Length: 348
Image (tube, rainbow, N blue to C red; front, side, top):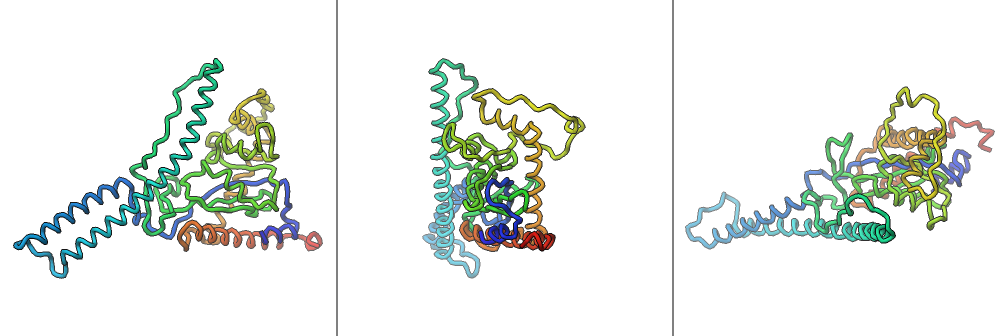
């Protein structure tokens, strides 16, 4: 917050009614992805270890058993396998606990959707499509636990063609100054649930926030409602600009042609209908275009100019502190650039 207060004093950042860009980037954890085990693999390995322990016990009871290689002793081999089995059991228990927490949240959302569907049916409305599939409390077979940094997660990296042990580093950038006004670290492998908590990372002193620009990976009706409405019919004053579908940076000839403003959606239109209209308007297009010009270059500078591509610390709390320091370093670097280009008379 001190860096932001300094920016305000230098008159390069104006608090209140700010326009912000939100995005996330994957940053490598201080841990190798090869030190992880999946839920399914852990179960199979535990079965194998149990079998080997039984075989070793039987060998110990046999007077004429074939001896082990020099330096190997049956009690030590049994203990080694038992310790390995205990570590795998802990890993499976952690994955199961995560699955239960996720199930509780997904079940509440599922029950809400089913109740809304039933209410529409009882009102005589024809409800199309199949009912939503209920969530499962079971862990996914490939869900992983990492032994070196259990709080890191396996995530798609680069262009999405490979996976790395990572954290999801989130940042909120003020579009005029390109200063980071909010940051946090998430364990989520994608941004679908990250819009609300990341916007909430903006300190109250910097707000209120007028506009939030985010790519389609952040979009959900629920998130937009939470940010734009205190209660049904009561607006917060913050407007989100986030496309429902992935958009290309390339503009076709048709995109260059002048178009008339689209008709406003009817009263009672869904959040998605309102969002589609919002991003088709001239002002909406101009605003959303600022997103890629602001937050994406910030991540580029952090990773290339500052050389920050991997966390040094481990654990969510510690890497969150490390990311805060990295964002602070970026802000001071940006402040130096802004101040260097200012007229001294304007700074007084």
